[in-house]
Image 1 (cartoon, rainbow, N blue to C red):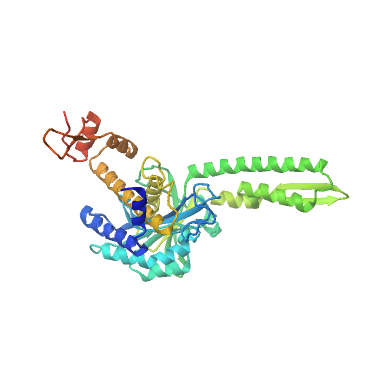
Image 2: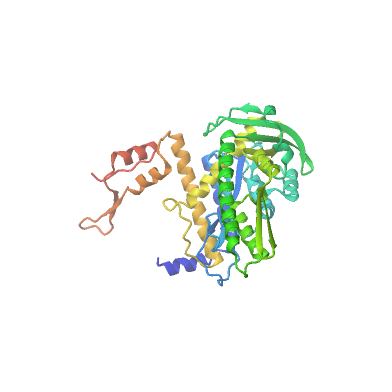
Length: 422
């Protein structure tokens, strides 16, 4: 049971075997726990590693880090969960620098094949994904399959939809966990070659947050640009228009709203001038997009509320990703593996742990247990097992140590019977 021997055995499991294990477990889970497959959530994330830049690996790549560790190499994870309980049904580790739309196209055939094998009746399976998966090829593949979808479109690429006056929107009451006031505008459009239902949602609270962020960012960026302009009064001969423009580009790139500013740098007889302006048309375009989200689907018969709720439930797969990054729950990182085969086994074990957590969460809801998952795990970790050695007996007797009232209440709620030592 030493670590070296354990790692050696990880090398004996191939990529195909790991994927087959995960798919087989999904089949057992769906049959045993009656998992609903009517709506499925798909998303991706990445995890940073401590691998050296010279270590050979197909999975570990440099990419945009969701943890902000851009200087480190990352491993990607694609995950498919059911909507009701967030139970992981399909997963694949992949090189983190592959674009989401390309990856989705590569995984579609495997994913659809597994889901069709899991299907129990005539239920209509719907995939929910974000705009990163959009492409003509991917949508064409879904249209040819037996699946429906709910996706989202970029507000940047559909300015006409964002300019529709709020007076044309209707108030929507969404019965979800987060009771927010929403407004929605619904229409039908031809998108990716077919007629789709399109819903534009507007959240006043999100709009106010975005406006506050933009005002604050504009003030901070202006202050930096004005400071740079003051420095030009004492500029030496080494300063050039090109060097000043490079510095301006660096400042604007930090603000994430560079199109708002129009900055011009000029030089006349060794004296530099810098004009700083904001573009009102660009500001209006930003305001038109703030607080809005564009959903589209081939479920033409679904109500507006059903479309919005299906997409809003993506928080369940995002919550699953947070669990995998929680040091007290799953702790995918730090990952002490340096070869692709071990990384894939590590990914399988983490997804299996996520599976157990989601089933535990499902049982907690069924038992109406009002306790956070973190607290449940803390209580369960407090239960200790004792090995009791008796005279004239070779094998020890396993017994559970004294259980507190909180632990007993939790075990009773989860319908787990354990006899403790008194």
